[in-house]
Length: 451
Ligand SMILES: *[C@@H]1O[C@H](CO)[C@@H](O)[C@H](O)[C@H]1NC(C)=O
Ligand SMILES: *[C@@H]1O[C@H](CO)[C@@H](O)[C@H](O)[C@H]1NC(C)=O
Image 1 (spheres, rainbow, N blue to C red):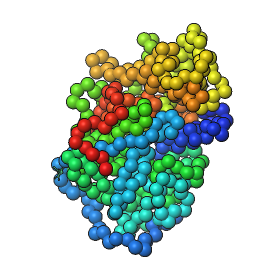
Image 2 (tube, protein in one colour):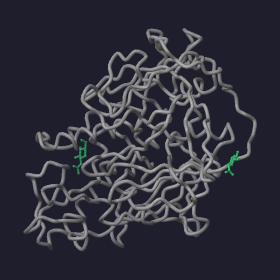
Image 3 (cartoon, rainbow, N blue to C red):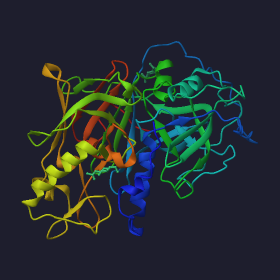
Image 4 (tube, helix red, strand yellow):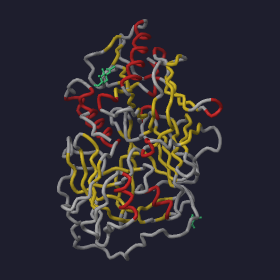
């Protein structure tokens, strides 16, 4: 994967008032592509904390029980605009401490800002995670091998007792860290609380644009399909199936779940997980693109779903085709382009400010992605409310961006904006991806009281 160039260049110079949005968007985009993981012999091992409670060394191997007890559900916080991200609160450590983690189905590694000690960290919502002693994951451990392998990096063990890594997302934004393991407190649907020991990154050196400005989260919850993901570890330990789903609410919040108890038995649109080069990402394969009822004359789009991206990205050809079809439609309406609104690259204004997408929905036809063919074909609808935002200036802006500008090559990314009020399920057990339109305002009933 090439490094992304600054997503800030997507738009004209962001005005001061837009700084927050733009920064969030940058961060979000950065989470998409963990392009480079390098073992670094220069990495410092975590400092031994002075007063840590002794904890017996945990079994890192699989517990053996393959009885999948249940599912775990987490409420989500955040929205597409203006926050630009959705995050979950996770309880980690002993005693368990809360951390806000950015939900990212586009990368594998979960990591926290870490006092190991911290070389360079941004101010997060909680104190930095502090690893207790004997928490280092050795270099030869499966999770370390997988972390290095999945990113195509040489698995060098210069310091055998630890697993150093460096993730470079984009924009030269990187996190240098060491793998540790600690207990995650998960409340299962049957109300039991379990404390599986999971390997995750202790990131003690974050570099890049905005790396030192305050951050709304303490780290990243990497839910990709690589074996270093906590999903694989939970499955190995017989806690939950390797299935993850999210439901992002348009009004903010929503929920995330591990395991398959909440997946509706009927009504889901399922597509096989693509086995192609996109395998590293969650992809339902290639899709033809419709605008309204018209097939746009573009090549089939390789599509990936990524909760770590706030907006949707089309490569130049489909982006151009969609934008010109859209502009043609809008010529016949009272909407005018609002060049002065720099919230996103393309915005429209009406005679008075819009309050919600419902005010403009009638002017914008929906998009449809058609995956597969014949009886196996499945559709993903992207109605106007899943590609527009209403800015604080009352304009409607296009939340589908030009991926060629950020060098995503041939990848088209379905981001949070297009997954709002849709339950999306990434089923690594059956190697399929499913979605169904639903309200995400409320946690599903299952006797679950999230922690
Ligand atoms: C919930 O499931 C786990 C794992 O199967 C089990 O150990 C626990 O006893 C169950 N709790 C309840 C309240 O049934
Ligand atoms: C999309 O980005 C590419 C690369 O910067 C550029 O050449 C192209 O003109 C852009 N497309 C549109 C429709 O703006």
